[in-house]
Structure formats: C-alpha cells, structure tokens
Length: 430
Image (cartoon, rainbow, N blue to C red; front, side):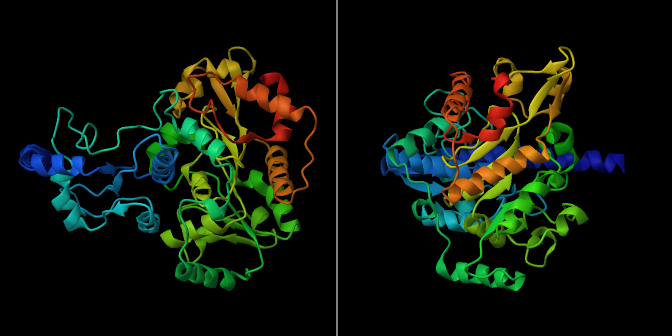
C-alpha cells in the first residue's frame, strides 16, 4: 500500500509540474492579449476562500476606487477554483456561492469552470518568477490589505472612507439582496414564526467543527463558549427580538440553557441551512453578536453593525463605524498578572493568530465573561434605540485606548468602538 501511495504521489507531482510548465508557456503565448487588456483598464481581483477575506477585501477595493485612491478599473473578480488535478477539478472553491453571485452587482465574476480555464493563462500571464500564479501579475490588483503598510491597510482605507462618506446603513451598503431573493428568505423566516415587523439578531461563537482538527491546534485561541452569551440573548429576547444562531451544521446543538430562551432558533440544525440563508440572515439582522471569526464581517457588508466579543489578537478590531468590540485579556504566568494592552502591542502577540506563540510566552487568554458580553449587547441595543447615555469620561477612555495602539498596527485607525462597560472595567490596562 505504501508503494502504491508513493507511486501516486510521484505521478501527481509530475502532473502538476507539467501543468506548471504549460502555464508558463501559455502565459507567454497570450502575452499580447494580456498586454491589450491592461491598456484597456482591465484589472483582476483575487480573494481567498475564507468568508472574512471574501467579504472585506473586495469591498475595501471598491471603497478605494470610490475614494479615488486607485483608478476605477473595469474589474474582474476571479474566485478560487479547485486545482485541475483534484477530486473535483475546477469546481468553484469559494466560501459561499451565493455571496459570489451577489458580487456580480459590482464585478464581472468568473464562475463558469470552462471560462475560467480558458481565461486563466490570459489573465494570469506573463508568468513571472513566483510559482504562485496570481501574485506578481500586472493585471492583478497588488494591494494586500492585511500588509503592514501605513496608509494602505484595510483599517486605514475604511477610516478614510467613513470620514468622507459617514453614513453606515443598509441603504448605503455595497451589496443588496434582490427583491425575489428577499421574498424567498422571508418565507423561511415566516416558517420560524418571524413576521415582517419582527426583528432578529444573529449570534455565533467560533468552535471546532467547521475546519479540520488542525484549526484547533493552530487557531484554537479564537474559540469561545457560546453559553457565555446567555445573559445577552435573554436581553434581546426580553426586548422583543429573535435570536438566530449561525454556523456550520457540524457545530454542537445549543445547550438546554440557551434553547429554553424564548424566540431562539438553532439555524445550523434546521432544514433551511444554505449559502443563501447564511448571507440573507446576516444581511437582514438588526445586528450580529459574534467573536474572532470572519463571519462577523458579513453583516457590515450590508450596513449592519456587530458586537464582537473575545477579540484576539488585540490588533484585529472590528472595521465598521457602528461596531462594538471587547477583547480577550492576557494573563502572564511569568509576571503573575494581566498584561496591559500597550505591553501586548509591543510583542508579536498583538498580531498572532497561533496558539504556539501564546504557549511559548506563557500567556493564558481569558475569555469575556457573561456580564461583559451582556453589557456590550445592552449598549448596542440602547444605541440603536437612541437611548444610550454616554458618561462624561467615556470619550476620553475611548481615545486613550486608541492612542495606545502603535502606528504600525493594523487597527490603528479603527472606526469601531470599544464597549463602554469594558473600558470602565479595565481602564487600568491601557
């Protein structure tokens, strides 16, 4: 069996190397067409397979265009496909096929495998130096929004955008749910008992299940206990709202503690789970209660705010103006105390998504408590109802926290707020 496996691996490597050489040849062959497309102002935008990247990166690109930071190119969104040599060759490999469809409102989106196969050598050539086909090509938008380049980072562009266009609302969002699709989604809501006049909040906590076991080993620090949302969900229910849990069908069903809350839906364990409903619910919720995961960016794409708890690393804050964030605390086993946020920012822990960095530094991450999440949700509800009373010292605390973020950090110009209760409680840490 081992010999057969080795033989298969060698054959696969030879086949991929052959395709690599073929791609180089084709990119040179189609160089004149590629050059002509460049002169015509055609640009290609490639985004990753994760929902957060596939949400925020194309949107930031469009905002750059609207700000006049880059020319308004004729833009092609080239979503990822499965490799030619795989079990499902050239199958669309996006995180959400319906979101891919919605991006057609703003881009020419390539979703047909045959068209993608034919255009690949044209849009991907000339094939230069790097083995990764898309990285250095002149038709591709070059700005990497997560790079540490002051002024060009995602948060810098978002801040500049909302300074010039301050309205953050569904009416001003980049994407819209078509009328026919909205009616389809409303039918599902009605089967749950949610009427047109009712409102709902989506909630989500990252846990093992969506990705494979390696996710827990590498990025398990981003997990959280969904039961800590109990008080917050009760608050939403008591104010007349519905609570819809989001996530993969691989997630564990809600505990009895949560499932007994009135007007709560465990959506991943219903018959209505689909890429469409994932997007529809995020687009129509009053706000989203989530954690350190890309799905919390999806509501913002449609002009809806989020409460993001258990943020880690501390350098990745929510990007939208009406968002509220609260962060995981860092307890140092060496110093026998909580680290201040300036101390965290001075180390690589402020940027790290990997468990091993925290283990090596002997840092224990402390999740937000039920009370802290509850207070953040109360603040969001009160702000949406225009009855939040801000204390006199809160703006100063907010400014002090943001001033402590170093200039080279991703979220230096973050538009979001840190929760008022969290700021008051941990003022001594910043």
